[in-house]
Length: 261
Ligand code: NAD
Image 1 (cartoon, rainbow, N blue to C red):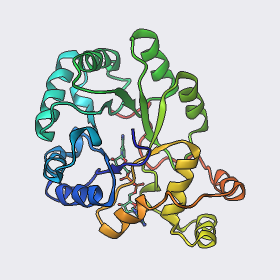
Image 2 (cartoon, helix red, strand yellow):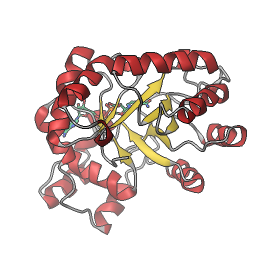
Image 3 (cartoon, protein in one colour):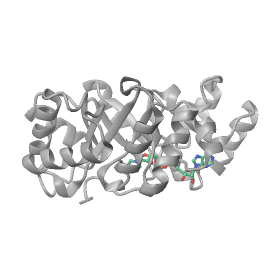
Image 4 (cartoon, rainbow, N blue to C red):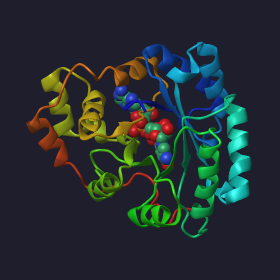
């Protein structure tokens, strides 16, 4: 799985084709969508039209909450593949645990079938708390490859990352730039950016990479799409990393997974 990919949440279907095409031209090979984003069709069109060999692409999609359950998951997966125009995805994720519904174990059993059938190369989860991971691992056979969670310098998820390390689960960061809301103006980030002659977004993405997170920044602006992948030719030093470590406020921008339906 590429450590840096392209996210398309909130990109309308008709704009997704152009945004994903721009990302592929800029060098991204990993694309993160979801059934609930309602842009699998536009995303899939860009993948097909790019002419890039399927085995060079890494495509992730996610099962929406209302489809949880064994049979409904199999049906929802077929529908996602159809919209994407693919015969397999590289990674299929349970979008939220929805503990109130108590269906994520059955759902994951359907994921194991999809994996066994070769229609997903890997399966995983999103927004799972340690208690959900532990139950899933106890009651099913395949350890999730990935847990995709909200993670940025103001929500560093240290305890969850330790749980991931214990089980060999990759940590994938959603809203890695804090949705561009305030984080990129934090003085410590701006100062580090000035020191390296880079943008605040590039500093935050570099922090993710050096921390070991998979990242999927989103933008529909071509210059930002290119800027966000241009992060492999500089390095943050120990002082920079310590400065960013101190920004953790345990502040969520999104919902609490324990309660979200
Ligand atoms: P993000 O942190 O990637 O921020 C995106 C926003 O930051 C853009 O809309 C823009 O306003 C700004 N931005 C982007 N690049 C910039 C740059 N170079 N300079 C200045 N500003 C810039 O937020 P996101 O879209 O919430 O998260 C990324 C991806 O994560 C999503 O597209 C989606 O694929 C995934 N995601 C998953 C879940 C989940 O529940 N699994 C939830 C949210 C997002």
